[in-house]
Length: 282
Image (tube, rainbow, N blue to C red; front, top):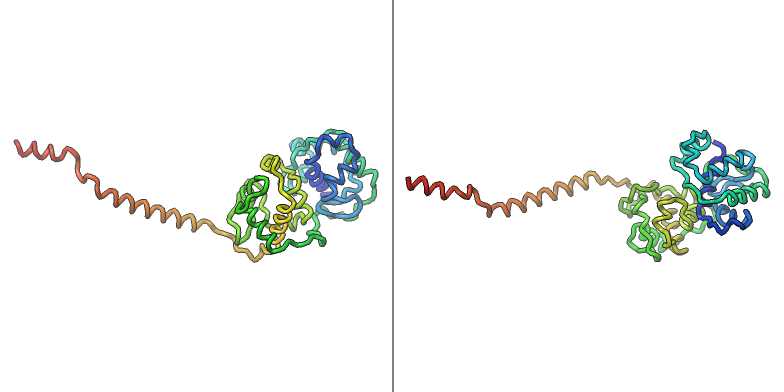
């Protein structure tokens, strides 16, 4: 699949935080604020692919439809959109953007021009310039992820929806994507961009009015970077035998409780004494 297709996916994720107030702003401003963390124009791969020349590879009408409602384009049977879904196994959220906002961004990309510096569509490795977090920041990120430390603005813990394979972290939720190797897939800039402006509807709703602080973002990025680096040494957790043991233990306790309580019960019918007296009187 061509790099432009992946570009639309990540570009849309970057754009979702765009506010309607950008309608009258130049495309360059919108691109720099919402897209430049993930994309370059003619300077090679960042988190996502280089977007130079993207206007020449698809029509304006297709770009408008896809960025605003990827799900609808996929459902229509569009081969490029379907290929995108097959590669990522997820659907980019619909974008609350006007035609003018999208056209402004596309116009800026066209004005900058240039040729894509890197053809491959795969995201690059974590940036060389990312400064690794300190051990204290990694520990804080781990505690924030698990909910042992509350987020400053009251948002829910990450483990409610996500899982990370790490011996120090309990099993997480399965509502959203597993994050063990997210740092390799997206790099520090990409993870930081998503935490700073969540592109997914469920995440947006969960953290509405409760954004992460800069320190929390740095701690979470540090923890995820460390989890990615160490995941090969972690042991997958098998909760099957643990759950079986807990269930068997609970059954033994209940049987013991009922056996003690049951000793005080009557061992024959209530009317047996009356019946016996009646028989004797005859």
